[in-house]
Image (tube, one colour):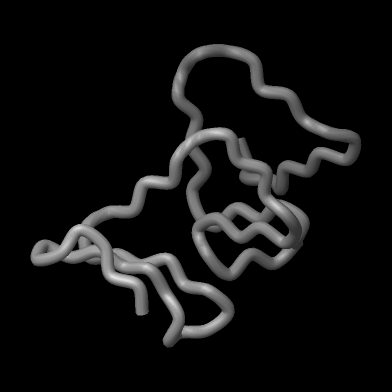
Length: 77
């Protein structure tokens, strides 16, 4: 079977309890995602955000971030 683009025009609902995956970048509110998950707009969140050790959460620039490392619980830069 030939590969074709998959497009949803009105919405998509995924039912089930299994795992799902997407290869490549996923854009929400954007047609050209530049990251694994690229969201253009506000995010509503009711759970926690887990960040892997030595990773950072950046705010508006590369020099303002929250990071954690093996020596400290939390560093605010």
